[in-house]
Every structure is written in structure tokens, then in C-alpha cells.
Image 1 (tube, rainbow, N blue to C red):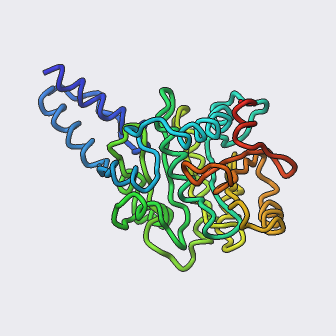
Image 2 (image 1 turned 120 degrees about the vertical axis):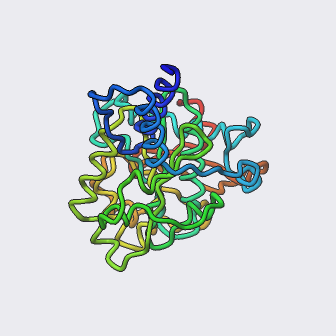
Amino acid sequence: MSSLIEQAAQRLEQLRQAGANVPDLAPQAVDPVADSVRVAAESQALSRRVDLDLDMLLAQGLLTPNAPRSMLADQYRVIKRPLIKNAMGKGAETINHANLIMVTSALPGEGKSFTSLNLAMSIAAEMDNTVMLVDADVARPSVLRMLGLPPGPGLLDILEERASISDVLLRTNIDKLTVLPSGTPHPRATELLASDAMTALLNDMAERYSDRIIIFDSPPLLLTTESRVLASHMGQIVVVVHADKTLQSAVQQALSTIDTCPLKLMILNHARGNASTGYGYGYGYGYGYGYTHDDAAKAA
């Protein structure tokens, strides 16, 4: 019987690490059978499990745990390493909310959602970190669609106090990956993202678990104001730029809207010279410089 209780307790701890708001067990409980049943029932009620079709995701060009080693996977290893280092407080400077990472772009169609998903998948493969992927593109959400999941309640419902995070957070069959959908569309989404409720939620997300990294798939910076509001809460921002498509002026204008963020990393998407995947990445801090993938690998 003690084994059953231990298993239930371990399950609750996994839920806590995934972000569910799990109450502590009552210390006065004396009936081990009733207690273990109650724990199991609470853990089931406090989580929603979804199974991702990993073969389908792999066919779409997304990284999965069972995928063979590839150039794309190696590129994301280079991309994620400085982000994780900063998120865990091991960078050159201490950054507030460094484990909150927003992925955005100047304009639509540059590959930000593809980057968000692959970055989350790559971090989920880490031994020492868990990752939550938040679909914060509340005007045009795409994370659930790309994962093959139906729409559902999420971030906006939490901010409207119509649901708690434990009600809407999705646990996946990738052990260290959870997903928070964008939620029910709302005409005042910008105001909700700028509300005190959003600030409190982000503070809780950032501080509850020291090993957790939260990736926000954000709207494009020049399309809506939601991303600029969200950026003010982030510790790190990843800006995806479509090679040979996005104008330099658009990139500069987009970067000017997120001046207050302490750390910006730029990724060059669809760079030439990568015939095997069609994708190439470079990264750089701030405005002035970047690396090709080969140079970044040498510098890492």
C-alpha cells in the first residue's frame, strides 16, 4: 500500500513541475487507502493529458524525441544553449525573468511558430530542464493546429478568471513538455495581456520552478500591439528573420519596439546554403552583429 501512496505523491510532484496548481496533502489524513485514492483523483482532475502524433510532427519538419540526428537538431542545440544558460542564471549578467523567452518576428510568415515549437522540443530533450510552450499569439493562434490538437481554453481564460492554469494546461506524451493554449478569443486581448492579472501570472510562472523555461509564441511585432505589451515582461526575446524576404528597415523598426528587453537573439530563417533542410540559422545579441550557423557553432 505504501507503494501506491508513493506513486501518487510522485505523480503530484510531476504535476507541480509541469505548472499545475496542486494543493498540499492534508497532514491529518490517517487512512492510507482513502488518502491514496484521493491523491490519485486530485492528480487526474488537475491535469489534462494529450498525446502528440510524433510521426506527423516529424513529417512536418518538426523536431521530436524519436527523430534521428539531423542538421536542424544540431542548429537548435546551438540556438538553445545561450538561452538556457541565461535562463538558469549562468550568463554574464543576472536578468529578471530570464526563463521567460518570447519568440516573435517583424511580420507574419517568417517562421516564428515553427521556431517556437522546435525550440521547445529541443529544450524538452534537456536532462535538467522542463519547458512550457505558451501560444501567446492570441489573434492568430497556431500552436495547437501545428501540433494536431483542437482549439481549447487557455491563457485568455485564465486572465479573465474563467479558468485556472491547472484547468487548461496540457501535459503531453513528451515528458518535459507542457502546452498552454491561447484560449478563447477576446476583443480586449491587448488589455488582458497588459493587466495586473497577466503580471501576476508571469511572475508566478517565472518563479515557481527554478528548472522551468517558458517559451511564448508571440504575434509579429509590427502587426499588433499584443507582442509589444508581452515583450515588457520577458527576460529574453528571439526575433526570427526570413532571409532574402524581410526588409532591413522592417527588422530595425521591429527591434526598436522592444528596446527595453535586456537580451535579444536573432535567428535567420530559410538562409541559403542549407539544401538538406531549407533552414539556416544565425544569432546575435542586440542590433549590430550576428553569426552564420558555422561561426555560431565555433563560438558556442
